[in-house]
Length: 210
Image (cartoon, rainbow, N blue to C red; front, side, top):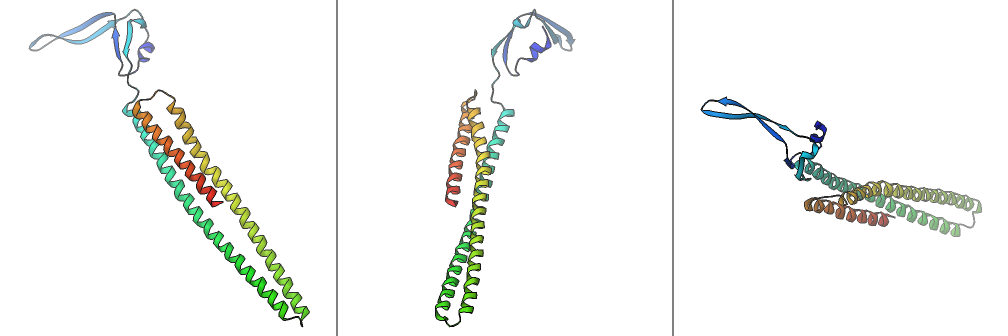
């Protein structure tokens, strides 16, 4: 029998061994004799029968599971805070854009009114109309650039947020299909439910930001 066969038996397993037992004894004061060590002689690996496998859920495996759960919670909170901050900045930019549009409309109306009242100076009115047109063109280009930047930002954030969340949910589903204890299934199910709820919340926030 090789050492590899013995080493393949999981720790903390309960086994039955059939073989020749040789006890090595030595005298101990106040006692007739005591077993100091022993040797087992086996014919093959078949002399060892595993009666009960070692439990899968151990302290060594519980620590990584708790670490994964804590990491997922922290990641979700961080993404939520970041998304809230980005949404606040986007709302501020949108408000500024509305203010710019209102200001532009006011100036156009002001130029139109001045043109109607100052028909006697066609040259000056023509110059003011051209100036208003240029201002409107610049404002329109600025608005178009802001809209393109917003669309690019939302597309990028949608990918960056959904990709890690989908990975977390996917790997949780894969782990749930393995042999787990009831407690492990309960913990992983809680992680999956939280991840699903978080991805729905992220989708709603991104749709609202659009």
